[in-house]
Image 1 (tube, rainbow, N blue to C red):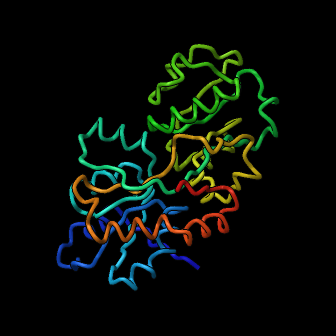
Image 2 (tube, one colour; image 1 turned 90 degrees about the vertical axis):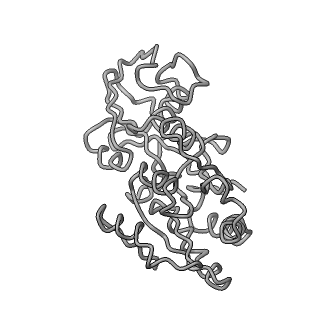
Length: 262
C-alpha cells in the first residue's frame, strides 16, 4: 500500500529549506496526493535504480508548489494543468515551465440530490472551485451542458461574473477545491476536480453526472524552473513518467478516471 506523509506548514518549511539534508542525487517534487503522488511513488524505484533519490512532498495547497519551485526549494512539481500554471505565471512572474504532459483528470459534475442534470430545479445551488482557472473550467463545463451561458467561451479566466444567461437562476457558491466533495451535503450540485473526487472515494466514471471529454485542455503536467529542463535528473523523471509502464499503470489503476496524455 502506498503511504503518504502529510506535513504541516512549519515542517514543510523546514523540509524545503534544510540544505544540509539535500544531497546532489536528491530530486524533490511537490505533488497533490491523488493521483499525482501515487504516480510518483510508482516510478520511485526506477529512479532509485538510476541513482536518483526521489523525495515526494505531498500537499493539498494549490499555491505552494509553484512558489517553492520558483524559489529553488524543490526541483519540480506535479499537480497542475497549463491554464493554472499560466495564470500563476501572470500573477507572480514565476520562471517556470512545463516539460511534459502526463495525464488528464476529467472534471466532473456530482450530486447527492439528483441523478441527472435534467432534474436540476430552478434556484438550485451549485458549488464551484474558488481558484480562477478551475472555476473557469467548471463554468465552461456547465455551459457545455446548457445550464448557463458565458460572455466568452474562449476565456479561460471567466468567473461567475461572466455568466450572462442563467435561466434556472442558479446560485453559485465558490469553495476551496479540496473542500468541494464535502460540500455535496449542502448543495444541489458540485463541480469537482478528479483528484479531490478520488480522495473522497467518488468514482468519476460511475458517480459523476457528467465528466469532461478526452479533448479537454486541462492536461496535468510536470513543471520545472526555466533552464532546468535538460538536467539529467529531470530528464530521467520525464522518461519514467511518460513510459509505457506508466501508461499501463494509469489505465489499470484508475479505470478511466485518469487518462494518459502522452
